[in-house]
Amino acid sequence: MNEIAVFTGNLTIYWSSIIICLGIAAGLSLTLALYPVDHRHNTAVWVWFPMTAVLGVLLARLIHWYSHIEQYPSLIRSLTDYSTGGYCVQGIILAALFAALIVKLLRLTPTAGELLDAAAPGLTLCLALIRLSSLFNTNCRGRIVITDKLYQHLPYAISWTDAAGNVEYRLATFFLEFLALLVVTVILCSLFFRHRSEPLWDGWRNEGNVARLALILVGIVEFIADSTRYDSALMHFFLIKKLNPYASFISVTQIFTAFCILFVFIHYMRISVKTNGWRWFHFLAIAVFIACLVGAGYFGEYRVQRTAQYVRCYLWQGGSLLAIALDVICIYRSCVAKDYDYDEDE
Image (cartoon, rainbow, N blue to C red; front, side):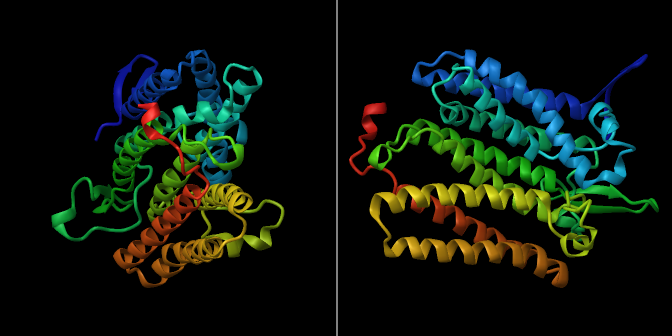
């Protein structure tokens, strides 16, 4: 498909850029609609948004430069010339967090968590449309070749021309991720309206729960999708180069996701243990978490690269990650005050 939407003189506008701009506008609109639900003024959103946009572009590009340094002549060019190269959406997530903390320091929002709760669905919608923009470039394609003609179309596959001019059909990772993130957006909107005000035991702050669960759900989608990509952002070391052969299969996205999930798990485990004391289900939750995290890495990276049994391996990986999500949600539910009246918020 033609990547260029408008070309006149020195001005070139790409279709992917148009979709990204629409995604940003859609995400901002959804955030502006959700934040005032608790009678807050949207000033905080208007301050948070431009900081997130600027920091997001820089951090997303910086992470991509780190993982694909061979694609750029220099670090400065990677941050100033956006006509080539790619991005890592983890930079956008970090930017949203940093910007929310700054808005909190400016005293424009009561807590950063409250702002992030309202921003999580909109940010996820924005990420979904950013992924859809790859329809007009060669980013975020799968390394899996689809040979069955029944599936050689969207949403499963998209045509790919190799260096020799041969046409094959690769897994449309970007489109499947786009659809999955749309589902996550709907789930987060439901969580926002239904569970954002749930009080936790012993006076623990209840802000930020929607945002934390968003990290889990978006992280699961990113973890699985990144495992299928041919252009995955892999880790490497500048100073300790001897470690590079052992880290050549490790993805920055998957490491980032694992740390986010671990952070959320530890946060709710800490609250649950301080509230309920050590109970049998805490030990079970820890065992399930470790086993499923190892299973997700084993089936998604080790087994799939050695057996090429894609369907079986990714089903096991997806099941492991969903088990982790349910594990974290169960621990979160043990932190919620049982006498909470949902009807008071309706």
